[in-house]
Image 1 (cartoon, one colour):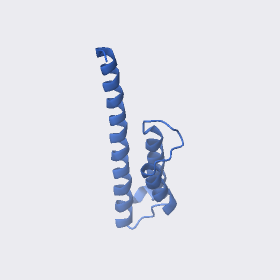
Image 2 (cartoon, helix red, strand yellow):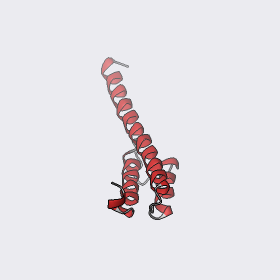
Image 3 (cartoon, rainbow, N blue to C red):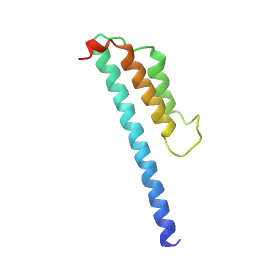
Length: 93
């Protein structure tokens, strides 16, 4: 392989690694948010939102068959938004 091919491979690998890291960070944030809301005695929304998002990230099936984790990131962000909106905004302050 020539130098340009290696550069393309390294750039693609870096983008995929960054997307995977973002998905892992969001998954951890989702788990921490649920734990914090439950400790505070606040509702965490429907249980299927949390477990559905976790299962979507962990299971190998995807809505968008791509090597990146962009759809996983979107599912995690929607779950975070749903969980936070189910809690009373004045109780979070």
